[in-house]
Amino acid sequence: METLYFTLGVLTVLVIAGVIGIVKVWNKVANLTVIKDDLEDYVGDIADDLSTELEKLHQHFETEINHLDRQFNEENREFMSIVDSRFDKIEHELNQRLDKIEGTLGAFIVKHNK
Image (cartoon, rainbow, N blue to C red):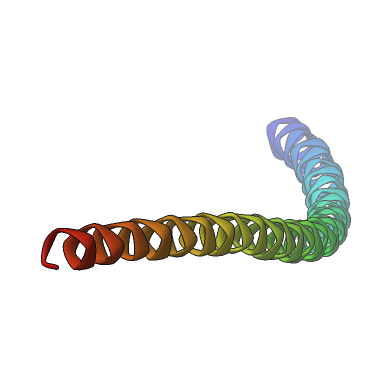
């Protein structure tokens, strides 16, 4: 009988230790689940913040690119205007000189054909 009582006592201690161990593991798993959920929320928040910052950066770059494009187009128009003005002056000057040469040649031909 004593062996039976001893065995039942040992089994009772093992069952109680097992139940306590299972409860502790269960609590740790529950804590890990909470920590996992918190980390997922944190990563989600960071991803949202990063997405927002990237969108702001993209908008800033778009604004700067458009600004630079407008400046370039304005500078290009001014440059083309200056170049066109210079060519008009050169063309006018050349036409005047050609007219003088034609007049001189015409006078020379008339003078020598008499």
